[in-house]
Image (cartoon, rainbow, N blue to C red; front, side):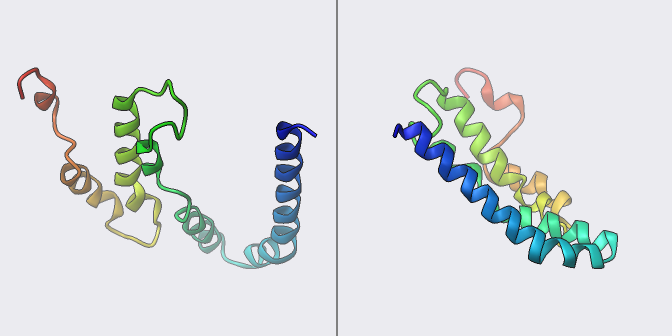
Amino acid sequence: MSATGIFSIDMALGYLAWALCIATYVWPRLAAMDRVEAHRAIATFNGFRFFGLAFLLPGFVGPNLPQSFATLAAYGDLATAPARNPRAADGARALPLLAAGLGFQSGRSRRPGH
């Protein structure tokens, strides 16, 4: 069997297992919750997804990904992480501070010689 076939079967079975788990354990509990609390639970779970810092690894996405884009995408994803956390009341207000701390500056810093 080809590697693509094995990968496809593995992905399909993984999705099936997660679908069964969600249908059995997660969905009934979310349906019993207040709508706002259910949305908060779903958004909090999304906060555990990977951070885009893997873009900094050479060849992770592909050999043709420009390094300048990879760097901006990686640190941009890291900087927006607090905004994805619905329990962090100041997440959105902290975003500019995080961006500044990671070295994102105005267009002034992109001029040659600066």
